[in-house]
Length: 179
Length: 179
DNA sequence: AGCATGCGTTCTGTTAACAGAACGGGAGGC
DNA sequence: GCCTCCCGTTCTGTTAACAGAACGCATGCT
Image (cartoon, rainbow over all chains, first blue to last red; front, top):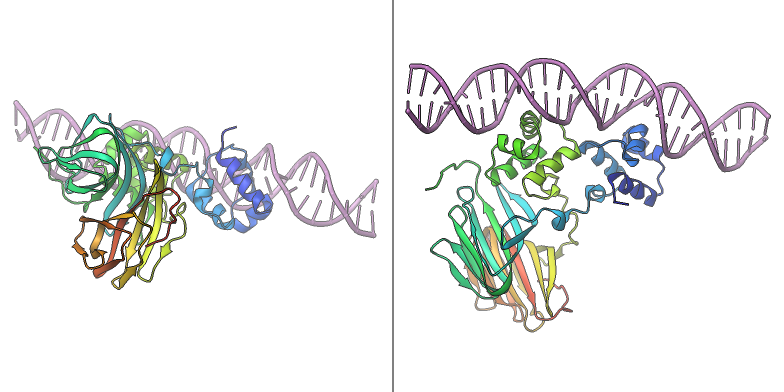
């Protein structure tokens, strides 16, 4: 039986020893709504879920598919499998942290939006990475930063490698395009 | 401006260099829907958010209020607040990735177990960090690696700073003391 | 100039999520 | 027995999220 939103909600409510009617009272959400949510007879709006989890003193994530990184579709690439660990806004910018596994084959990457910077830190193995024509060879523990708005390339050397990839996105104005 | 769902969605989309129309095409969500979501003119259903984050290759959490759910309680020193993002075993070793916020005050750290290495990458601000007597000054985007089994020191320069911290433990049973 | 293409916003009709009322059922009290 | 509470489900009318079309505004191309 696949873990559905309704089952998670019911389990959470039961765990709190809270009746459906009482949850309706405390959360301000209608009884019928909760009943049909628990039986997967309808979808939910975000504000509804938020009202429910708040009343149950649980984080919103308690109702969501155990997404976290693993379920989040790994970024594509023939020889790169990247999983987003976290992202957070810093003022008007965005920072993302990936864990990535590199296969020995060469992986070329198209340029990203203007102003993006990437930083790679090798956790296992050795890699050659960087902007096209300016790649660097990194051993375990080494880091390299390069512009992400130019074509760039990943390549593990002598076996698979693991890296941590930091993406640094700039302000949302620049729209320069590339040759 | 207090970080709304619409702003997070727009930032995420911009970060991917994806136009609103293209996101509509890829996700199957109507253009009008996305436009009004980004301008906070309506709330969203969960399935809609899922379709959008999937098309953007991001976890659902990227759109939700920053409740930093899965991670353990922050480890803290006087001027360092670190949150474990992920850890994974590599053979007989262990790698941990932290996101850490540094206050301007100096934070000295006792040596860790022998063989531990740390790598710091600055995400915002500037820091001085490294083994005692051999610290380095890092600007935004810079990285520095140093031995964790010697006394070392963190210090944000000229305001609070954010860093990503990689811990490389030689043995798997090493404890997560920080920093 | 004119026409095309792509962008983001606003408009329009449909559908479904919602609150609350009505319903049926089990557990106690007297 | 009957009455009363509370439970969870189902029904009913309202409201708003939605898809898609229509719109206005840029930029580019001949």
